[in-house]
Length: 433
Ligand SMILES: Nc1nc2c(ncn2[C@@H]2O[C@H](COP(=O)(O)OP(=O)(O)OP(=O)(O)O)[C@@H](O)[C@H]2O)c(=O)[nH]1
Ligand SMILES: [Mg+2]
Image 1 (spheres, rainbow, N blue to C red):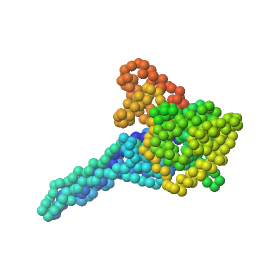
Image 2: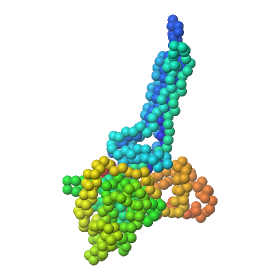
Image 3: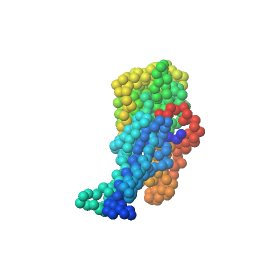
Image 4: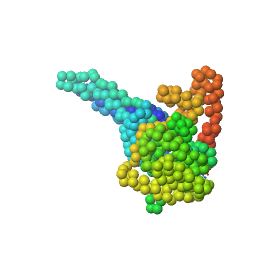
């Protein structure tokens, strides 16, 4: 199944039906009187949280949701029928944000939660309603009240207990594969992981969910690399596991970079309990391990665990510690951790791309018209607009730059992954969270 975690959609509730103006006319019935019925209410726009969905991909294909109008009233005192509601099904963990993305309208964290986002307009009164002793033949029938409309963002923030963070290639996906039955893509190049993966860890009699997200690099909060857009998926985690590749020279710097990005993102990530582990210890000498552990402990100020996702060194200790943090946090607050309205910067630090993205963000409607978020969270420009954009730039250099970006290595990687997703290899091992 393809992964999409944010979508902008247009919703509109149904208009109310008009009231009728009608008089009873029958043979031998004089003074029949008014008998125009009221209009029916318009349909509501309802959002419902369902199990067995873990992506918003459906909202990439349909972005306009309009509930039906109420029927109008009719003679013989007939009231119009209510317009059909429209029910949008979303996965657990979906937030609904307003168009500016600065207010959370709803946060759906439990299966079965239902919320009326927009109420349908009421129907208008028919002339029967206006019958009084002094006005026995009213000719007034009201139109129905219009429905409401708005643009909203749907933002999925997955629900997991522990979140993996670290630089690209730190071994996050390897760790997830080692401790759960999830089979994320693993390779020795940066940004192998392009969207979050979940895995269920069984530890003794207990179980918890671990989320693996794409790696962070310096400047991710400004859109460098894949950006910090996927950090939203660890906002609901109770503990973070920060993995540091032990084979690199300056482990303390690696730690600082990722902490810096967590702080820049906000959303409460910087204050979550953190477990730090020096990964890839299988390929380090004993004295190196000690030096690097010391350097890291001095930097972060608490214990650092030696780990190797490949050989299994230290796995148990770390899982035990994670579980302990999770239990403590659950004892304090058993409910689902609330997520903030932070969205995070999108990928690609490339100048041309970033400038265009920024331009688009100033006018949210234009952004919507010009492209959409792709399956892996990448921004895809509509093809027709591409020419126009290039014309607007007016200089050839920038256009070339954009072409390079379109055919860039990163883009290729994404395409590869999309193909793999189609094979269904990935999806089966992941729980439907
Ligand atoms: N020697 C050794 N190599 C490891 C270990 N864990 C991961 N690797 C290697 O490091 C490389 C990157 O591993 P991944 O698990 O893809 O790293 P990642 O952090 O998920 O990387 P991104 O998804 O790109 O952010 C792969 O070639 C792994 O085989 C380990 O414990 N020991
Ligand atoms: Mg990975």
